[in-house]
Length: 147
View 1 (cartoon, rainbow, N blue to C red):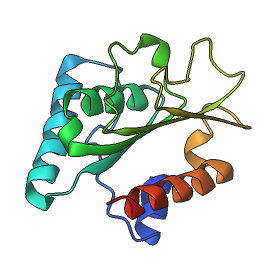
View 2 (cartoon, rainbow, N blue to C red):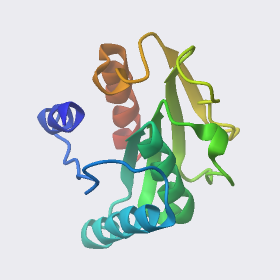
View 3 (cartoon, rainbow, N blue to C red):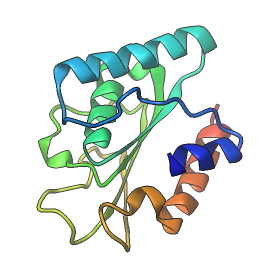
View 4 (cartoon, rainbow, N blue to C red):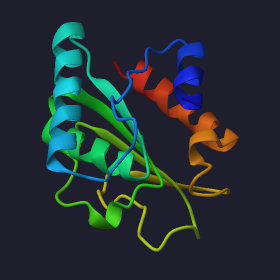
């Protein structure tokens, strides 16, 4: 909610995921999120930036991987990328933002075109971390200038 409000104040039009409580990665959830991204792409004609925290980042990654025509950038915040299969195409900019010693999995993206950024803080605090917001502003600005 805090990030969505901030993005709105910054002039972006964030979409809700439609997930009130994240039960974890599932084919059904990824398909539902992918359909939402597809519908938005078809109605606007614009590729979107997907931002996901923790398991939401893993889900957003699955959407970007399956529907790269609808995603221009993927930003994960502390996502358990150890569990990610396949790769994200180069057509989708990829950034993983994470804290070093928080959870027992690898949060860095493995793709050669990925940008991996370590920040101070906690896993749970990534969605309200001031440094993360500064990075998001920079990354979204890069996305805007490339379209």
